[in-house]
Image (tube, rainbow, N blue to C red; front, side):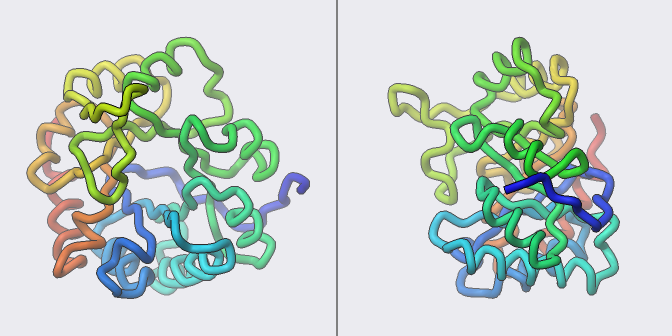
Amino acid sequence: MKTQDYSFPIPPLDLSAYLVVGPENTKGRPVATIVKAAITNGFTCVQIRSKVAGARELISLCEEASTVIAEANLSNKVTLLVDDRLDVVYGARQKGIKVDGIHVGQSDIPPEICRELLGPNAIIGLSARTTELLDYVKKCDTSSIDYFGAGPLHKTASKPDCGLDENGHFATRSLSELSQLHRISSLPVVVGGGVKEKDLPALKQTGVDGFFCISAVAGADNPAQAAKQMSSLWKEAHK
């Protein structure tokens, strides 16, 4: 693969309300329906993530999400990303689908390779346990990265392996750790992992740039109402 000449403009990165969603998270509802409910009620970033869908299905999900964003006239405000799958991002773009970038973990394909193949304007996020990110931020080159994802704040069924340490024990991230990460990071930080509406005021006090969630919106009985409540509360909370 060669570096893409991407023709779509990339929207300004706003991590304040960030939805992560895939077909396994929606209680049988279409992913596009959940995306529409989120973005029309204040969510500013969407990540397509699935550990069960194949590449073709993921590209189709990207197309559906991109279309929903465009139909809402939010293509210049809402960022659309894909979790982990560089092949899906590249393939979607080759088909003319507006996908703005990728989110990877520290054990996934390196950010610098994503940058090389997706070009200088792509959005690239990196996540890991907060303790790893603290060490990473202190000593590593972050020039290929646009933001950090940290967590988990709570144990979550959506990502059961998130938060496991090297001994297989589960560890959540404290608000003080997140405050420290915000202080030392030169890049924006978004926090997730079981985040619910009640967590948002205290989370915003840490200084981080936003929250991400899966089940709180995608698994809600009324995703639109849940998205509106969470995005509004984040905006209204004071640092």
